[in-house]
Every structure is written in C-alpha cells, then in structure tokens.
Image 1 (cartoon, rainbow, N blue to C red):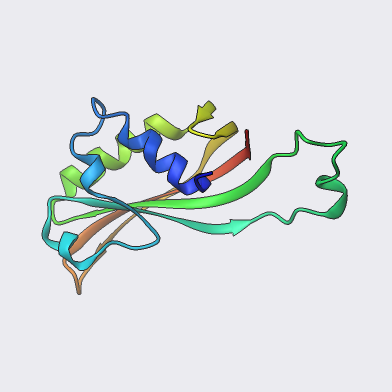
Image 2: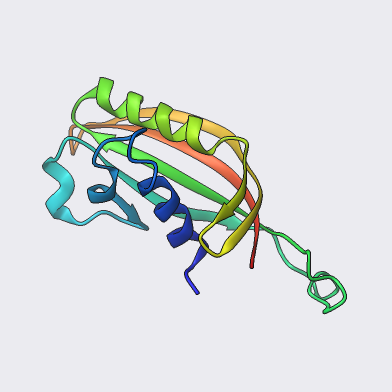
Length: 137
C-alpha cells in the first residue's frame, strides 16, 4: 500500500491539465541536484503529526483519521512561474475531500503560505502548509 505522500503526489501528477510537466518535477522530502537548474520543482514533506492515542485506534473505531501537517514548496529561478505553479497547487488541494489512490481524505486545508528568495541558490520559493486528515482504505 502506498504512503499517503505517494498518493498525494500521484493525485497531483494526474491533474496534468492544471500543471504542465509536474510529473517530472515533484519529489518527496528533497529534490535531486539534477533538477536545480530546471524551470521549477516541488518538494513535499511532512512537518508534524498529531499524536494517535490508544483509544483512537481501537478496532471499535475504524473511522479514525490521521492528522498530519505537510509542506509543499515550489522552487524555481523565475518568480512568475513559481507563484503560478504554487497557486495551481493551492487551488487543487485546499478544501479537497475524497479518495486519492488508497487513502480516504477527510479534508486537506491550507494553513499558511510563504514566499521567499534564496540568495545562495538564486531560487524563488513559495511554501504551502496543509493540514491533512486521512485514513487508509
């Protein structure tokens, strides 16, 4: 069974008409160095997990949703492209509920967004933080 992160990335990649070439430029945890000079790339990683307590996982409570926070950051040398891609990702994910591969999504909610410019790499960054509530199906 795929990880939630893999299901989320697969969902984003399948939305080809919304974001061109995303399949070649989205990664879990970190991007390989080869993509640092491309037009853009996106990285998804977990920020935190709300604790699951013993009473939450009893067999009598199979509907328990896992609550995790994720950051989806878009990087690139051109500010317009980075902001456009990030906005498309925000529109695809914020408020989403339904099924992604093998996960039932209770809700994906945008918590915050930040813009930055990294002097060392000379890349713009647009970071989106999401709260995700889901369970495996």
